[in-house]
Image 1 (tube, rainbow, N blue to C red):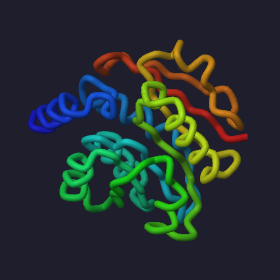
Image 2 (cartoon, rainbow, N blue to C red; image 1 turned 90 degrees about the vertical axis):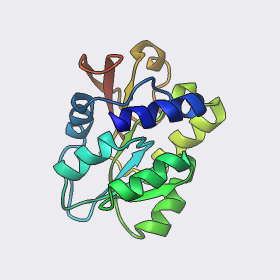
Image 3 (spheres, helix red, strand yellow; image 1 turned 120 degrees about the vertical axis):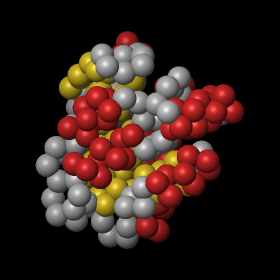
Image 4 (cartoon, rainbow, N blue to C red; image 1 turned 60 degrees about the vertical axis):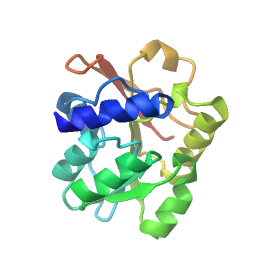
Length: 186
């Protein structure tokens, strides 16, 4: 309950960056993590916009031998995550600077997957484009970029360049219901 209240407080203060009206459900977190697939030893999972850490916790549970590098723009979320999830590497910063975050915190690591809770389509268009370009730059061919959305229709004309059409999975047990999209880099 405290996590939900904390989330709602951040939503009220920074709704444009938060992008959701409630924390993601455990069912959505499991669906997102399932799309990561098999990782090679030493692969790092990048998480964009971890918020309260629902996806981060699931990723840590599902991939205990891999580092999670979570990039959070909201200072309050980042500070809280550092205390509650010390096993993850929490970076306060912009997701458009992924190469810099990797170089600073996991130098030389291969990115095995990108998992995003960012409201990309509600961000300013140039910022959303910069974040997608950063994902493209750091993700090797054949690896997934996993994104969820509340509006599958809005993503129809917004497939990231260089990625295959996504597989989709609807998660009804989330507020509101969400669609998990898994894009694979060509």
